[in-house]
Length: 412
Image (cartoon, rainbow, N blue to C red; front, top):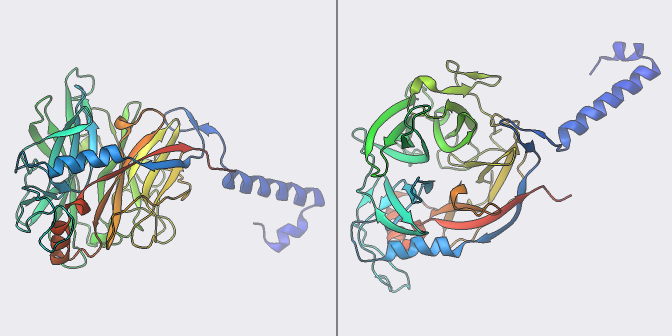
């Protein structure tokens, strides 16, 4: 705004013009408008218009976890990322995973819950193959070996892409978060690096694991960024989203970041470019694209999809009591500006002191009109003893749940 001296020099017409331009700028900033997003297509404001529980998918994982045909397969886990394979199968990737046997109710304290023994095997990651809408097979777990003592790998987003740009052979590329054990409040581990694993097709054999973004030199663990919570392919680029752990206890006030990689080159560290606040750069450190630490922000795990020319981001709502509410943001470019939060909703939760987290979109399961979204459920008191006891006495507390939703313009 001009200072008083300059303002007094304006003519009446000049003041009127200034006010008109100012008002127009405010309206252009405040009101959504149609324009083309990055990658083409018309970009308009988007929000969740309708949603409903998806009992079919939720029940399919519950039935698979309870099946006693095998005792070395998945019975519960979180993370819940998926990718459709060229032959129609869907590969599901999970972080910390329980294996072993599930027992029919009642549990040892007389409650009507299916349960597992507290000594049941727990591995740091797993992969489940689904065919025709039903989980059928757990690959030997852990699929991705620990990188060292007191360190582990959590799989996040995955993509089927050419082995190299232009290649006729496809592979699965899986982004991995490496973490190391740390003191409280780092109960979920200290972020260390982002890696990319290459899996062969169709046998899903791990061929290689390559580090693409190390963070050990960042002294403050809360500012370390890990990429791969979600990815979107637009044209010749794969946009890879990530976040920091600004709140180690997973409250959704972290910041979102974005990188891009040419399609076919996810496993090449030198091919990665990061949004530095004004441009894509292979050298400068990434800068946040969303999150003010209070009223806007993301959980360390969130999901992004593209609806027409609009990018839509799903996360747990910042400051939501007990981690129960999913909200969304929208943008015309992966780098923003991101608008929101928009309409929120609270998906069903089982009774008890539980939390919802890690909302993940699964576009390959939708019908073109409705989007499938999963969310993970865990005991809210995450101390090791409390969590182990409660997740064992009621196995349904540590399995993904699903909703289907419809996106549309915000109501006027």
